[in-house]
Length: 481
Ligand SMILES: [Zn+2]
Image 1 (spheres, rainbow, N blue to C red):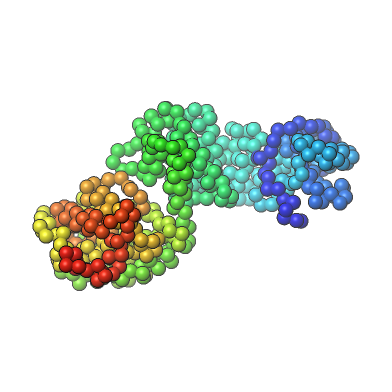
Image 2: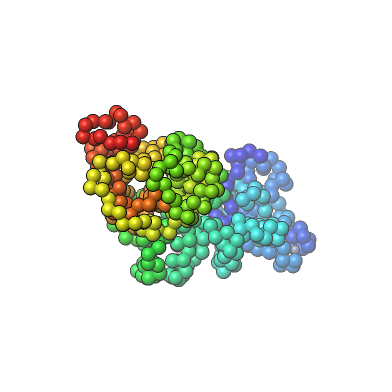
């Protein structure tokens, strides 16, 4: 079979058209007249008309045995006439040249036969969410919305991240103005997309993302009311932050849509490639022996996690990054501490809970006093590791992140790098006893340092400095690393 003859249509993409045809059911052998809808014929196989297996767009079952097919066309001349007419009138809607196939390449003769096929597959693999979603799509395209909603609900019970099933339940809720349901599905859909979930047709993912943004932007007042009323105070999830930002943005709609879709889909990383990437990222940055520092005194929970890695004296926060310049932190509060060979999770509730003692920051902290040099280096090696794997960060971005961490340690996420730097600060506080005043002093010095390097709207001097301090060493910038 020639590839070009395959029109990648599934039954759920068909137009409405009525035409009657006399068919013989090949299951029970009995004859009946059925509204078959559009007839699909593949012209590449029409050497002999007898070889054509037509396909029908309408959902119908044998009125005797209620099977979905297969069928024989009683009068083959009818097919020949339809084909001749299509050749004379290319716009004739009763015939489509091409063929329909299911996701796995299977060709059935009509949607009811597809349903029988999918149900048989599901009977063999009842926990396969993907199959339930396929059946949902088929039934939806035939106008059976309630039945399709059941299939999607089953699919989501098996796999809450199935974005196709979620998208359809979201759109059902929107069209029926069920705002509480719409809000629920909107959140779950945003989360799954932010986590990089895909479908068997990658182009569908982008379409779903645009639909989601469009629905949020054009949502009725009731949706926003419902959404804001249900926001929990204090701890915000990434999907809630995303939806809220999308709701309150102002400006050009097309631009907002493009930017928000990029934001939704930007974190496309597969878990399988991540572990090796993390290790590579770790190797790129030299590790310092932390336990050799006189102030080294990890909190008990961190100490426990460090027992799980090979070199508990050399570690930093591991992160996932792809070569396409994306990185992600799955859950800010679950920190992966790594020595470059092994990783161990450490749970950190908040930065403020990790402050120890009341020691005031020294007045000269901006001069990077020697005692604090390891602390600065611990933070900055994370900046270097990120820059090594996804490109140098700008001075402005680093300044914004340091300033936000200083002002509001538990403030909302500004993005993945902010999350990662939050984690680095948590591990720093977990490793060395530092007071709130010292924490603020260290971040204040970092803010001023990035501000000093920032010379153009987009500059990368700060990272360049971290890479090779001697190039930049001047009298007034006498930093010790
Ligand atoms: Zn029959």
